[in-house]
Amino acid sequence: MSYFLCLVLLSIGLYAILRKRNIVKIIIGVVICEYSVNLFFVLFGYKMDGRSPLYSPDQQITTMVDPLPQACALTSIVIGLATTALLVGLAIRIYEKYGTFDITKIKNLKG
Figure 1 (cartoon, rainbow, N blue to C red):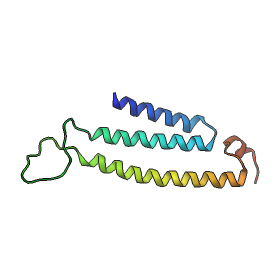
Figure 2 (figure 1 turned 60 degrees about the horizontal axis):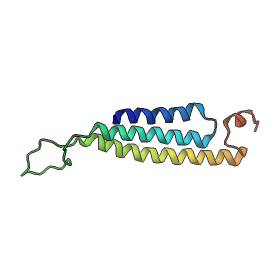
Figure 3 (figure 1 turned 90 degrees about the vertical axis):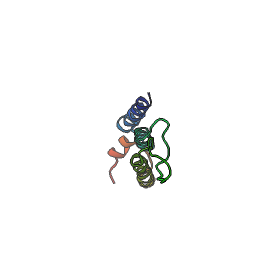
Figure 4 (figure 1 turned 135 degrees about the vertical axis):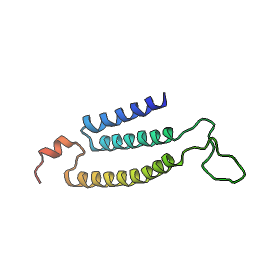
């Protein structure tokens, strides 16, 4: 069921990226896609009744959660933040130059 939620979020994000003509809505679609990938990473590393991936010599390791998807999710969050900041910066500069966020109007303008 949770993997289905990842697929739904990814579909919503892709729909916003491909079908919307407003730059702000496209940025929101990119962010939704990034969060769906982060959710997938977290779900992929989840283990029922798992414990944190910290080594302790006096405990037997039987149900430890995989730390690699957690590290990938943290890296993805940092990269997503940088990408979002770059996209917002570009959107602001486009708005300053053309006075609109609509892609179809920007294509028709010369300048």
